[in-house]
Length: 109
Image 1 (cartoon, rainbow, N blue to C red):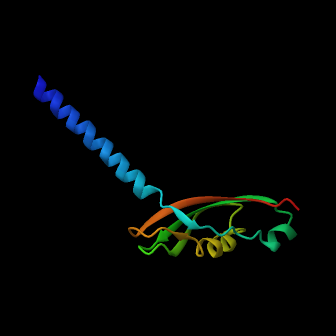
Image 2 (image 1 turned 45 degrees about the vertical axis):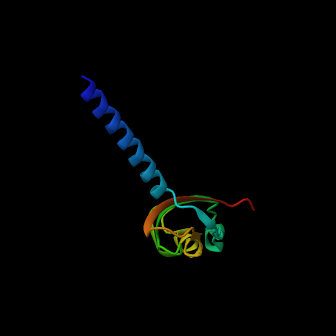
Image 3 (image 1 turned 135 degrees about the horizontal axis):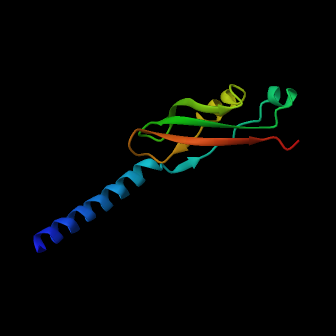
């Protein structure tokens, strides 16, 4: 019985360690955040709100090397502004990886 408890404690400790490792990888720290500009074309068309979910490829030195649009509402209205802004973001150096962000647009003019 004590062997089973010991094994269980080891498994729990290992899974907790894995969760911490995944949390560290899943949330790279942003050191420079550039907000996207609200597209003039959107305002001219009467579009005042929207959102874009994007996946960033972050290099080991912290710079963004690629931005992929995953979801956009409305479609193709804010994509260029999001890509331009996110390519200027910087993260703390670490392992190369990807990170997803969601940007919400609201024109208050």
